[in-house]
Length: 106
Image (cartoon, rainbow, N blue to C red):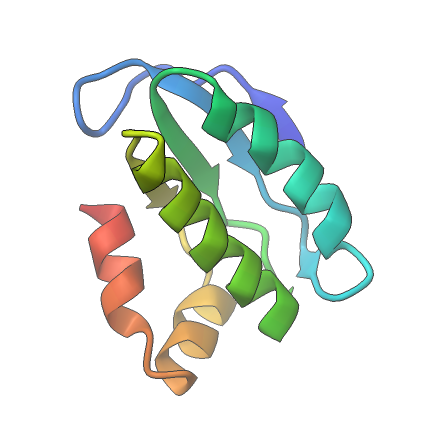
């Protein structure tokens, strides 16, 4: 997972950072992801999460993304998920959370 400067924000405000997710988001890797998301949430702007590389997503990863979205909203920021992989879409769908993917992508 890497923080890279984002070129454009979907909402028009400048992005705080783009967090690019690793291929595996599970109990072992979720703490590292949290360390990447916290500074992005603390900064001003839209929190952008690029999920194109995710091949394995387990419950702790889903929980962290939901919590990060809520934390961003509490800080007055937008949480935007870009390029959700088929795995991300399928896992959220299986959990009845497809609406979150749509909300975060709009």
